[in-house]
Image 1 (spheres, helix red, strand yellow):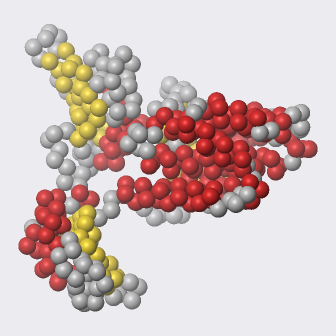
Image 2: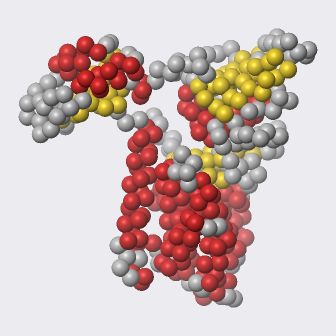
Image 3: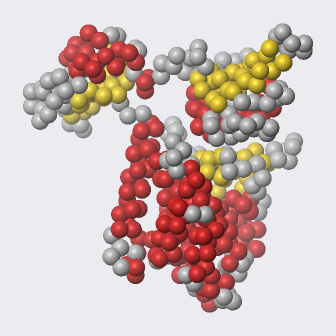
Length: 430
């Protein structure tokens, strides 16, 4: 990267056309571009950083804020997600503030794309375009069609500005009932990726709640791997109180004797273990769901409690079962021999805490199945973790369970990102 005279860092190649310049506030005045680069790079390659400086002072004094441009829009949004109002830097009294710079009147497609429902099936793209052309320039109009090529009675329209799209909604939503339609036309902003994620997590939550409710008796909760009263007590309690109380509940309900009461792994059998891990993964999935529905911060404290209870339970599982998870397994899985599992059973893990080593990753992902390898990538120069790694299971089902439970899981300041590693012969785009 090139150091310009004014102390800004700028790389010479250009960022993606839809990248966003972000404004970042609440940074220590002593920081230079170098520290900022370290803060931002975990989220993606950085194109440019400019610290705002007071030029009247000599030497010019940082104002404690900067602009940063990542090469990709995705990296900027991920950084914002992880940092804004969440991470407080050393010596600062308020968390980082991060938002698109005022100069960025963002014009992302998803901000101006409409979903139109209850359109007569007789209409093709041209007719729908005509119907909406009065509101402004239409960049794209697409009718959803079934396998037979016939219209499903709905369409997507992208206008060139959000204002035009909003105008179309005002005028057209419920304005008429078209031929062959059972109710008035629907006209709304199309769901964004984020809306879809939220909905998926809400459905997951609803399913889990249903599993809990459908259990008429304690003994009948097959869906949760048999960890019934404990599991409910843990989730019920942590929502209101601390993780410590949840751990005590586990202890008082006899799990401790079952695991640590002098039974060796062999005689204990795997049932208790499965019961415990079944509950643990259920709980982690629940953590994921709660995390999303509470992302607005209302549930932060109960979330933390759940997260802590979950990691508490994990450490508990690992420490209470030394004979089952014997060193040999740990060494085997975390050892240098970088084994892969079958197709669909290998995961990339991003945003790991800096201090996590192979063992930590292994312990964190053991509850979901049999791990064949767990590895954190180390920077050869500095010998420090690059904060990502991979975990391989011996089957794809465990890998999916781990994604469901751990993708988006919060550890300290970071949210893990867990995704399938693509196989060599699989050229599908992400």
